[in-house]
Length: 499
Image (cartoon, rainbow, N blue to C red):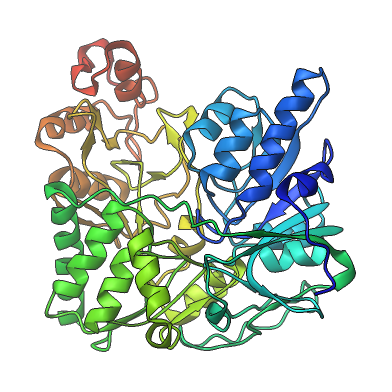
């Protein structure tokens, strides 16, 4: 093959201070791993010499430790977007050592093409196969790879033998035209193919190929527990009730689900519910539970942006590609998360809240209002455009010291206008058609942990007269009490007056 083979260190040597790098992958699936480890060592060496060395980073979503972790520990990141979940990266962002701008995942590729953000100078893509005429076959995720391949001046390919060449064909690569030339995206069911199985790159842009044999860095998921199982059962039973009431078609609708142990428990409960027929998935992350349900025949087809599954499950998929390639498509995130398609398909959207308030507003990103956790991810892409928007959360955290449901969210990501259903382990709050005071009463009655019910009812009595009875002096009292005492249950409403 005509492309220059090189080591990861040789590739890193060609990346300079202030470069802006775009990566393939979505979560820790499909991400490059070798060049960034070498780049972190280069940054450390430059810093030891007293030289500046930082780069900008665009990714599909979160990444593995070899990108976000290694580069954070090397203090090599100038800015980062759009989503992360690495502890070291989180520390950098919250200390302002790296600048972070949080975006809806569907928006990043088009923002890059529009010129709203700094142009990526370099692309690093993981592939299972590459041809001499510049066809790149990705591995277990797509993310923003097509747009990075289009815009970057120089491209490095990590040709990863861990991922079989036979994976080629599972991808559906499609980039929409930009306004004013954009047309409808012709996805009318989750299994519709609309693009190519590869990314086409000008071979002259490919600076070098680094051969690797490195597995994905997807960690294992936390096992389901009593709380997450109850949340899952509440979701499944609610959807069953909606079907019986005729508000969900008997054939059901495609499902979008977030990632994590709550999402896995929800999907498992849906598969076990005899009233819910086999269904399709149109989502961003295909996780372990989807693969399990697919083997059982409870998921008919899954369209996503990544195979974010544990290593044993990924190896099972790779060992049975004839079966799974007929049932899975991997797309770019501006297609997997596209609002137009979400609205057309009528998705049932199920995402996890970090915090909710009694009026139905959702905080997905910030702990106690100030510290970034991970980012908004794709939740906004889906919830605002879904047929039915559901948010789930355990009602408490830190052994009950934190209530996930508060008087007012400390950071607003999704407003009450986008949130239709809130579900905890205690029950379901159906917020459709309710006024603010009705929403508050419904959420307190059905979703709040017993030890917080009276505290939240007392807060309502402090509320200012009006359509939404907030009390501006005490709206964040749960959070200020936690900051002072470490326990929201210690809030003392006698300190606050009725307005």
